Amino acid sequence: MKPPPPANRKRFYETATVADSGSGGYAVQLDGRQIKTPAGKPLVVPARVLAIAIAEEWNAQGETIAPAALPLTKLANTAIDAVTGGKPEVADDIVKYAATDLVCYRASYPAELAAAQARAWDPILSWIGAKYGAPFLVGSGIAHIAQHPASLEALRSAVNSLSAFKLTALHVMTTLTGSALIALAHIGGELDSAAAWTVAHTDESWQASRWGEDSEAAERLKARFAEFECATRFFNLS
Image (tube, rainbow, N blue to C red; front, side, top):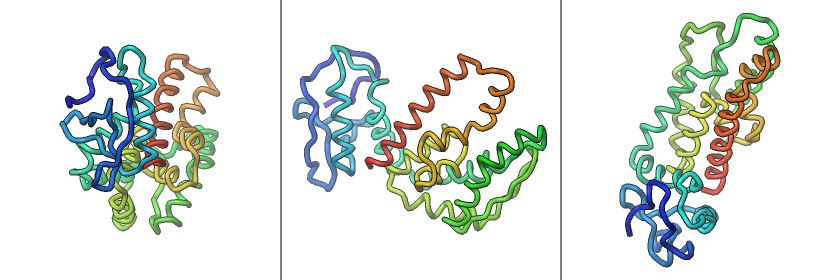
């Protein structure tokens, strides 16, 4: 069967279902035929609940298939085609975020913004330090902060231990928030998705409280938060 169509196209199937792949995973099928990833690999996921959720996306399509309405499918494709064979590289990219993490770079003024950052971000650093034995240094301004190599290696070990599917979700969370430490605190249960998103946008919230909200920027953030919540769901189902 050909890969799912890359653009809106007339629906060519009746029903999406889940089947045991025979290799310890769960396949998603369209009218009994295996869905393939863009790279031509079988779309097989590690958990039945995730396969069911992906099948539900396909069953919810109308007369035409809208790829934007298949976000879990897209994440599964990425996990299978790009991350399964490249976990070290993806883990390295997440650690690069940690090495220059958002929560470690603070404003020196105004004092109100610096205080807001400390309230939002200090608890995350405390949690990361306790969870991974990984202290992180904090500085003011944009001058580079050389983090402890042992702290970065502790995070690398933790990230590398994740499955390709969970690692895919964590990478998306990291890029959307700009912070590996916030993403790790989120998947570790320290922050729910709304709290993680809020602390990641402390600066934007402070600016909006002073100068008013930019409606277009707010809409973009809303769309990105939907992506973040989808990545969270994918992580939890995987």
